[in-house]
Image (cartoon, rainbow, N blue to C red; front, top):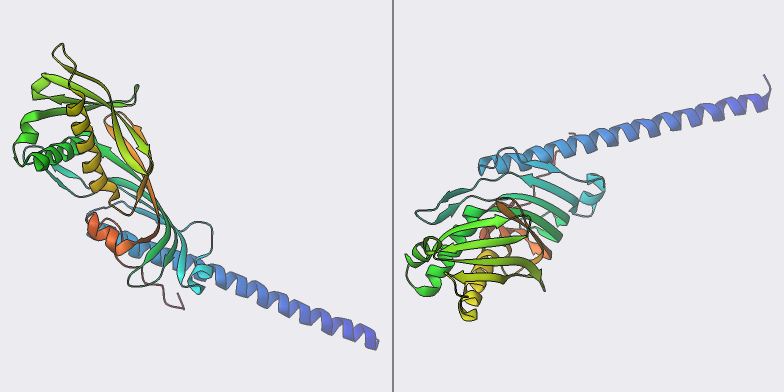
Length: 270
């Protein structure tokens, strides 16, 4: 065997070893990535299960978690949580959280996590809307029973994309069209009847404002903006979004549906 042939054989063996090592490192990285995703997803779903939202789904998008964690953040996280609502129309109370889809980007890994970008889609049933409006009317009037006495039913009209509000057992009906306007929720009165007469504009405006303000306090607060509203069969769906959202504050404001701290990372040898 010539010297040149020997050098080629040594060179080939070296490159073969390098290739084997690179493949092994790639496989190891994939295993670590898979284990990290499983660990963090299970931690998140466990938190939701403890809050009564069993069946929640958590995923982390296409960007490798390892890359994001190297920068001290989770690059992307998606959550789909079922409804845990318990609504008592007689007592006019709402407990739990509505069904929600959450998309977060750039969530910092800290005890006070901040999402660089947050988009949420929330579905609110008609009973939720009814109790919310009853409570808002009662708070404005200063009489706890007024909301229940005045407003007796609420239905949605998917075909016309409107909400029909019935007052005093059908004595008069107000038709409202919800829309997102300048980042806020607005209800435009498209029709109102008191027996055979139109309701005064001042009355319809007060009712529209009460429903807008009540839902804003329930689903958006002061830090999020409302992007879209869609009327469905028996519910309405609201898209909201925000930047640099403090998740602890959001959790406190809306009753703790969102995680209140960043999930722990898996051990290095996971």
